[in-house]
Amino acid sequence: MPGADPTLSTVDRIKRSLVGLRMPRALECLDAVLRQVERGEIGTLEAIDTLLIDELTLRENRRIKTALVMARLSTMKTLAGFDFAFQPSLDRNRILALAGLDFISRHEVVHFTGPPGTGKSHLSIALGIEAVKAGRSVHFVSLADLVGTLAKAEREGSLREKIRFYSRFALLIVDEIGYLPVVPGGGNLFFQLVNARYEKGAMILTSNRGFAEWGQIFGDPVVATALLDRLLHHAVVVQIEGASYRLRQHEELVPEHVRSKALIQPPPALPPRRRGRPSKLQGAVDQHAG
Ligand code: ADP
Ligand code: MG
Image (cartoon, rainbow, N blue to C red; front, top):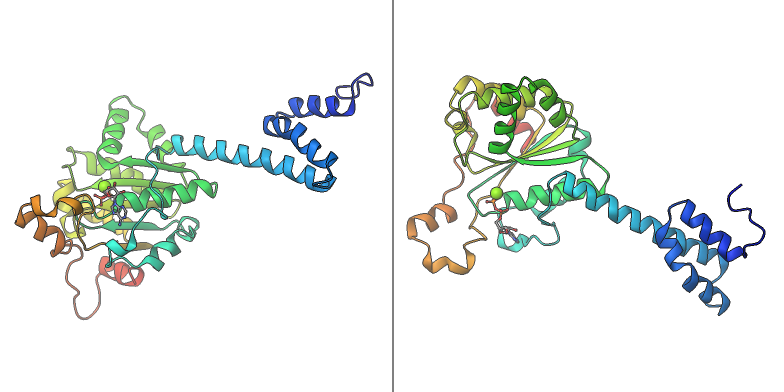
């Protein structure tokens, strides 16, 4: 029986057990902690507590590191690193509420819309990191890469598996909707994924374009309408209307028409509110965008 070797001292037996249990951090700390006990600085309970917490912390940090790589969240953007004062149109409390991650349990879709450089990707990554820390599975991908991957899978006859792969994550972040035109058929592929995840998993989407422009982005108004039908049901829409953080130090070098676009023009987001009964899409936005 391992560990029962009577020729070993108790401390050596503990060390052997820690090796067997794969507890490298506790093993590393053992001697120092025992010296603290001998000097009367800490009690035995405290010593056990310290060893276990050190080991757990090491494991937790490792798990998070691996999960962040798997999630493709390698650029570390955090909520703590986000300067809310720079983006006054953004309701800080609303973002902090999102960081509570209830939207993931509720399988909701969070939309960040706004001009380039206003922190859409930063906030999505930061929320993704919060989700990883909370033990949720997360995946980050740009729309162009996602559609490219799905198109390749379709050519190779493995579309169903690929859609299943992207459906497994509790949170799928799709970045940069609208920066590049979607390849023909791409909207349809994206729709199949969105449909597979509908009411089963949460998403965060970022876009520099308004929903009214999705027909153009996806090159097909019918697909765009079907997409928005799913993506605005149970949705949180966060519109950022402000200046680019990237350009903040070089404002004088930026041509006036670019600057004024970023500063003044809000994203051409929602179709104008109509009186009377709201359409299905508009209703969904009104209901959840508060
Ligand atoms: P977008 O995705 O909206 O184009 P990003 O989120 O990529 O913009 O932001 C551009 C750069 O500026 C990133 O390096 C990001 O971390 C930084 N950034 C943007 N907004 C803020 C902010 N309010 N506070 C701190 N950094 C910001
Ligand atoms: Mg971005």
